[in-house]
Image (cartoon, rainbow, N blue to C red; front, top):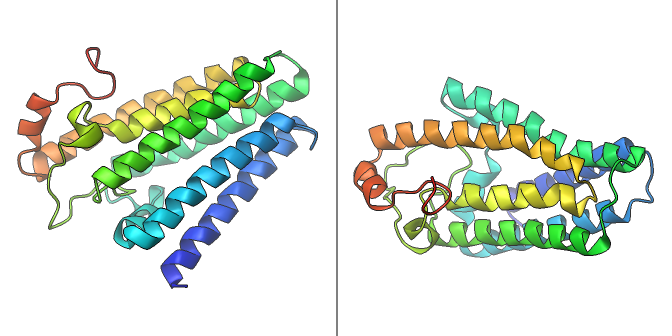
Length: 225
C-alpha cells in the first residue's frame, strides 16, 4: 500500500471516529440507532469512493486528501474553509443535541429517506469525480487543466456543491432531527460564498471558463440560480 493510500484511509478512519465522538457525546448515549445507521451509510459510501480513486485516479485522490484551510492558497478561502469546518460540525452536533433533548419526533421512514439523501449526495459527488479529474480539494488551476462541460457539468457549473447540499440536508433527517435542518443554513451560505469566490478565481485564471459560464447559466439549481 502506498503512502497516499495509507493517508487517505487513515484520514477517513479519523473522520469517522471524530464524527462518532461528536454524535455520541452530544447525544449523551450510544443508544442512538439513527447515528449508527448514518455512520454506516456515510462511512461505506466514502470508503467506496476512496477505493475507486485509489485504483483509477490516484492523482485526484491526492488532490482531495490535501485539503482544508491550511492547504488553501488564497486568504479568503482559508477563512471560508475554516467557517465551513465549524458549520459542518454544527450540522452533525445539533441533531444529536436534539436527540438528547427529545425536541423532534422523526418517523423511521423519514430517517431512512435522510440516509438515502446522504447516499445520493455522495453518489453525485462520485459522478463529479468521474467526470472531472481536476476536482481539487482546494481552489487552484493546474498547468494541464481544462474546462469540463460534460456530464453533470453540462447541467450546472458546480455539481459537486449540489451533491454536498443534498448530503447536508439529508444529515439532520438521517439523525432524526427536524430542528437540525436549521444548522444547514449557515453551511449553505458558506458554500455559496466559496463558489462565488471560486468563480472569480477561475474566470481570471482558467481560459474559456467565462465562455463556459455563458453556456451553462446555472450555478446550483437549473432554471433558478
